[in-house]
Image (tube, rainbow, N blue to C red; front, side):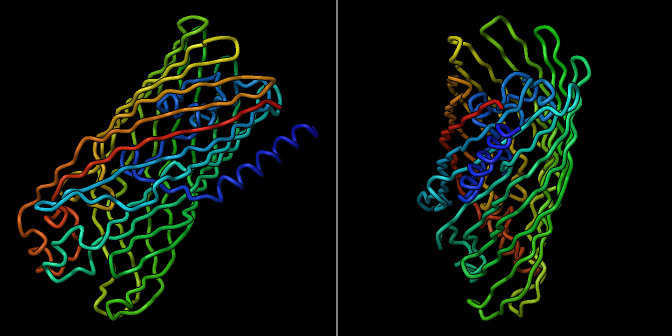
Length: 422
């Protein structure tokens, strides 16, 4: 018991150190989804929901805790270097000025309660966003005399605290848990208006894992979570005032299913499909009481659709202590051109990943690398569409010629992690 407590205390200290860093990011999967929840998952392009053997699979499907024979502690960090740029129509390429490298931490601990029951708790960041555009990137705003509405800094910095219990009967394990989404920082600035806030709320999750002979199949579902964010709107730069404000961020539901096959003692492969309920991310309304010229609510329409990701991952035992990992995924974008926003300039993207794990004296050290490449996104909204919208009293630029141009996105991810038994 003392040994167990010592390991958990070590994990708590490590997680506090990791989570003191920033964990927002550029959008790396569909929408502003960050599916990388562990170093092992990063190495296998997040095809982990049907994996009963690898501790790094526990954050993806807590039902896997039912297949562990002892306590597990998994700690890691993923370092993301995004490259986002836009070439506006008739202009030159401009890069987003968000942080050059962002750290996204993760930790998961689990243990047995008895022969059937087990528990687990994870802390990670399943969503994140950061873009920052310099003034004049989208010159339509200045041309129309509304430069103060041009997007500047957008950021979602959040974490999920996820306790679970699992029950195993025979070759099947089922888990039920709570998702506590904590939005540490929401920023929705224009070049002259500052909007920020924070908040938290709860959802739930369920996991199922069945393993028999060389096959295993898994399912994980997480409910959508509506987080009410409270903060301020500062319009003093345009002659308005500072006031309290609130908005709702609707994080989507996540359904991931997969099947894994152990070909022999060395090689295993898994194929997963994830459906993200982005259709719930419709409109952001920022309610405030600032004085004119700011109107209330400030509205940003997105009208996203549900999106599907396909993931293939595998592992190969190089020796009794070393494992090679690899993966590929395709993520479809939820956004459409009719409501395109430069704050979240996503498109369909592919990931290619590779990793290595080395076990020694009860500890496993892990490394992973992933390359993300999105398809170029060309926006060609009708000329003068933003002028027409402004004439109707609607200031939302999404889906108009204000954002016309070609958008490029890629990223390099490097992950390090350790896990041990107790």
